[in-house]
Image (cartoon, rainbow, N blue to C red; front, side, top):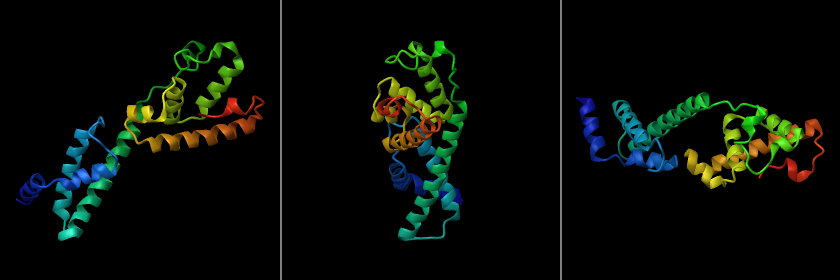
Length: 182
């Protein structure tokens, strides 16, 4: 009977779910939007079963439970996606699809440097590198993979630190522009 009451209340007013989605920067354009709304509804029912509050504290309780539940759900999805991400081969014939602007066959040093950068990147950072080499902007990359642009900027900053550290370690001689990340 308690679940029926919770379900009726949820159908009457589910603004807390949409408030959580807004806080998480999830829009209707997100690939998993409908799944996240459904997951939020399930989390609402779980929170309803354990709720002891009324008024504003009640809304805050539901918001917190749904927020952390959806955050866990998104993290799990992200981990599963990383595991499924294909590993890019380092064979020379495969590099042509990665970068149309630079002829990596022109110099072995370029291919070795690109392979070294690939070796220090996470799957997400390498996705950023691939997309940038194809000429895409940060906003386009973020929209394509369904994350906030700030997440892409953070990946870029982490990658920049890794590459700069790597270049210092090998005492890279090629000029400042060549080792920088756009």
